[in-house]
Length: 186
Image (tube, rainbow, N blue to C red):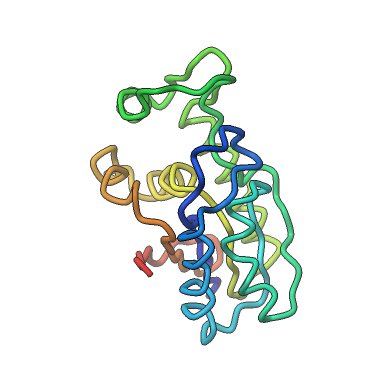
């Protein structure tokens, strides 16, 4: 059995507009202790992450506890919305969940995000069979992965988890066959 624990980052500081370098808020930094506690008894073999600062920093205290490095994987990054900040995120999200090919001029569609995340997840499953793995990630990225395995997961489900930070979603696989998805609001 391979267990993949996707960890949605803790609360980010939206005053920093650059997606890649956006840090955690003070609350987000404090909440990383919850992540550390949650994983202490999980026998984690390795840690992977999106290259975005908030995802790395959410799992870093646990990586330090284990004295393990975090391998960064570019394709586990969050979706690119556009080259500029958008004010009506809800309207944008609704449009994307209605049409997985919808995107702004310099952004990514949910289909594109899902495709690259599933490709990387399959690489991880091939490379690290029968391991317990943490992947530092993002709400939309994780939601597209859930949707891949359960296409009933839609905008309403996304909306329910949108403000839960940090969030752990555990995917258990037997070979590449998904056995279960579990949510942990830590």
